[in-house]
Image (spheres, rainbow, N blue to C red):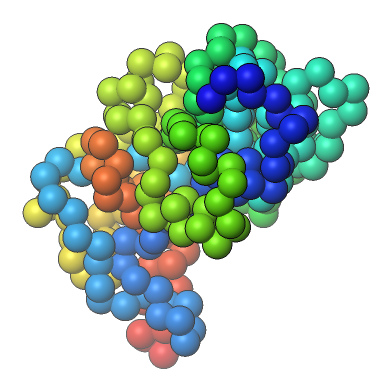
Length: 255
């Protein structure tokens, strides 16, 4: 896209195009009670397991002209050069230095860096990573959004369907490593046939593979982990498995 000017585009459309899509749970959620049912996501070939960090989803959006925006999962909080930024969750303060290092080179497309900002006072599990208020971030995905002349004119429903349907060009595992940024910890790579198919089996698998978080910010953290994200190398299939979902479901079965 030539002549990109963030002040002249539809910011609502831009925001929707660059939001992170929802990730399904590895075992499907029962809409009646929020528990899990014996219906796992189907993977094929090698599956990479990464730690799911419990913080707040954040975005560094590098625009076609080389400038950047910072956002939470739902909204933009800061544009490069602003005198004042939205202080929500400390995202702008924590990620502006990173954004400055990523911006600067016009590319003709949007590149979105998705990060988990965690620790501090972010969420109910911040003390798992630090009881002293330390804050950190980890990169977990990067998407490229192109054909902006067309996509920025789409109706909101079409943008949402495109986003949730995987319309973005996602970085592969190799490309994520090549960014040189701190990634969410890579825990294992297994063949899809090795993944447990039952809820009880996955509960045990999580405990074995991730007994404690790998991203503690100091030695004061309690050390509990949220769970694991399972993905293929090219991100064609992705799912999350959280300890709390499996623990809650299995407790219900014993009542």
